[in-house]
Image 1 (tube, one colour):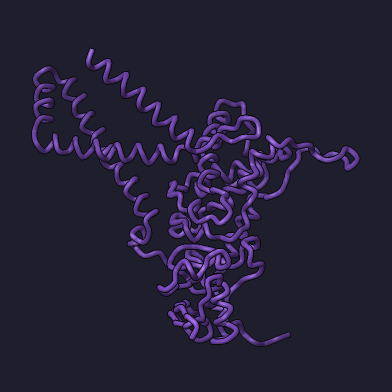
Image 2: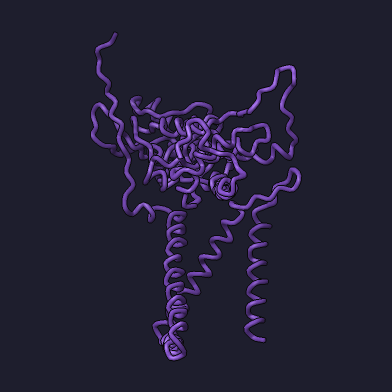
Length: 255
Length: 133
């Protein structure tokens, strides 16, 4: 008889349930099975009503973020062998509303990513015939780490500041600001500073640092957020003594 | 157009008051933050000393005598331990706030953390040397 592992899955069916509950499944266990494989076995063979998101199965798409034994992890990058023979508990990502079963509603996170203008802004766009914007390897190194984010939302599930106050811009969005602000091709810093400087920007971070612990791509959002604080403080002083960009002239300034 | 109403009913997750007991990272963070209380109390005691100094020799000597009492000795010892822990945690966090790039190479976390410890050692040696000689 093959070995089995117990997987406790948090269920929530909005049309029936008023609150989530736990459901236990016995799943055949093999050494190479990921948590996501376990969930797919449940859906294919035990309970087809179980809902969860997944796609690439190689830690690229960022779809299968769950709370696995109360820690935010990607289902495809976590393996049953690391828990066997103990049981595994799988729940939707913390700090987000639960839409159904293991599906979190991450709309707030996605809107925040859009809010920071995650694209290269140029003061004067050149002609196509001028060619590409040149960048040296050293210039790329300044932001490369922060560009590895796959928008999985694990850092938001790990951030108690976001859990207590969802207005906080949060780790991934602040890391993405740093990614563009450190890019030599970008000239949009003045448009993003008001977001970093605002009450819900970098200064709402109290440096718990758990966002970097859980990041599956080594982005280190805590580093990005706290380096933003240095830039924010410098920007404040430079603006005060009258040498900086006047952010009030920037369209959409919320400060 | 469909007349069916939505079955959507997003469930709002809430953080429990004891959220910080749930994992090691949160407990360490709270411990680091709690050590600030000792910094504040120590600052207040120093301010009390300055105030006593401004009130003359008798008041200052009374403040000095108060510091010799057992309760203050215990407080200073606890504060020293709290401050050492506090400093250690911030030294460990320093590489996240400081990013030094030489060419295409980013200076490693260990180098920055070691530099913090070295600075601490140099400063402490100078202060102790000044106190002794």
